[in-house]
Amino acid sequence: MTQTFDAIVIGAGQAGPSLTSRLTVSGMKVALIERDKFGGTCVNTGCMPTKTLVASAHAAHLARRGADYGVVLDQPVRIDMRKVRSRAATVTANSSKGVENWLRNMKGCTVFQGSAHFEGPKEVRVGEELLSAPRIFINVGGRAIVPDLPGLNEISYLTNSSILELERVPEHLVVIGGSYIGLEFAQIYRRFGAEVTVVEMGPKLVGREDPDVSDAVRDILEREGIHIRTSAECIRFAKGSPGVRVGVDCMQGEPEILGSDVLLAVGRRPNTDDLGLDRAGVALDPRGYIMVDESLQTNITGIWALGDCNGRGAFTHTSYNDYEIVAANLLDGDKRHVSDRVLGYALFIDPPLGRVGMTEAQVRARGLPYLSSNRPMTRVGRAVEKDEILGFMKVLADPSTKQILGASILGTGGDEAIHGILDAINAKTPYDQLRWAVPIHPTVSELIPTLLLGLQPASAA
Image (tube, rainbow, N blue to C red; front, side):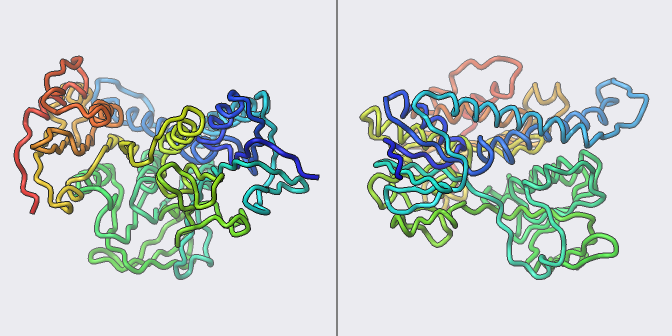
């Protein structure tokens, strides 16, 4: 017997629960389907547990630097990985349970636990239950890519999920992938005491960033003793004695690395394989992402895709904004589009990178005339006072419209300070107005007006 609802939400990640709440408040009867843990990637294997580990690693780092601040420790720093893991697991469990309790106690919401499979454009099966609704919202997230590399099936390896279960510090962690996830774990485990090598196929770390940002990130990590191997065009694996042998064809360095553990961090893929989307007629792109329009609706009327599975953003905040767009259009009579949002994101190494808008390479690729300004973190009083002076600030602007095109803040507090610029771009505030702001001293943000004052013409060639 088919159970009918006004809406079906598949997945309890960042967008799903909030959308369910809005739908039920509007009077709809909603079915929420979750196959595993409530809260999605961010809560269970992403932001919350990893940033908890980042905090523990930062505490260890500061403890080792105690003497620099006049704080003398009588004993060497020791890492209790069981405690570290337990702390991260507790943060995750509390948040996941909170999401689950919210949904299960939500008036108008019925929770179904199990895998969802489409039977048609308006029908979804969960185990023995067949559900039907005129509106279906897919929020199934993504998972780590396991690449097809020679010898990988012969060794044991870690992903961003399984590494969270470790209760030991690897002797030598080899990280495959030099972007956001890989670099965060690299620094975490280096600060926990592991030897760490990052292997990246591309010519530079964090390939989407400008070369000056990439070079500065590399310098920060290498100062902490992390080995970086770029241009590793032919990566292969074999069992070592002991550990794992990782072969790399790089322009420099030894052709092989002997490590104790391997972490795969080469990207993410959407969880769309087993949804039966073909039965609903929902179109996928070649990488398996659900194709959506500017309002996040699929090619099938009445089916939307939100979050990591739609390929329009790979962050918790973009997933939440997907919910906001859908809810505004569906319930508020608004006309919101994905292209309206100003994309910002961060790399949570220490010091962090805050980014918003276009990179300099993107501006140049469009052949746009632009202004640029760059200031080192040594000019920031707060950074000097904290003795955390690595990194720099960079901003790009359009000389005719006076709109800020993009910015990078790599340095202490960069992940927070970038929001001043993000808000200015979102509000379309001309840079010559923002430069007259009077920011609080001593903060990282106080250098932003000075940074804008230094804007000079740059060549777009």
